[in-house]
Length: 345
Image 1 (tube, rainbow, N blue to C red):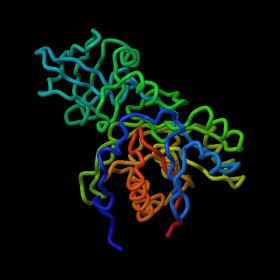
Image 2: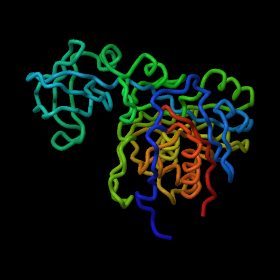
Image 3: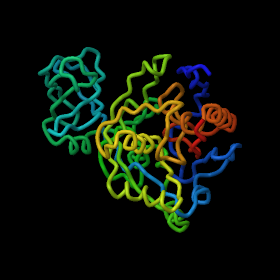
């Protein structure tokens, strides 16, 4: 069989299926059950009945920060910063949208009355893809006070109070993401209580989702794609919970592709915490995850490749055709899908 190319992960999506707002209730979204051979249309609150006592749900507990900041250069030209991460010394690495890039040393006047000094590029001071800045105050406090929810590029409205509440999971705990782990947005207290009653266990990992998650793969050959880097952590309690799940014959159910990337990065590297550039494509040997709960992903994206690697390319593409025909809602505020790991060939 010929190797997969990026075009194999393309599909035509009617623009009106891109969800611009969340479902009225978190667990009221639709759920496409693709864990069997034939798709079954369900509602998300049905999920507890599809899992078993002894299964382990693994969530990403990252918290979305209000990472989008607006301001101006000394010349008056407007600019936008998207803070990708707060660095250990308190400085930040950010994407910048501006007509002409200012030079190192430039002081930017940000909306809210604070300044940002451009130090250079990051991670390489000369050629790094991001900009390195020092804010004149605590970065997290300034973002909380003056920042905007970093909605994905395909959501066309300015952020609102609804977005501040709903583009965040109910169990977000560790600030650092510029994109939500979207499969987890569907969980509410009623679903969590039903899972507890069924005997489904829960554990958490952290992966601070970066803006690179939205980038399409621009190379036709997958091996030529440069994967973005994200920080992850698998706590000792979660590592023990996975071992206990295996011992009792339960299944590890990853909530979202970010949980998959975190767990499989740990399994592949032996490192429980650090940076990952893992690129999961068909042929990948999964070591941890048995079942995946995920939203629908962008065409030609690394996440389409991941879900295809997990559940089988033909099966996933058939599920997407079904979802489009049945008018499922797509992407971050859209509906969800349940997948079982395909047998290794």
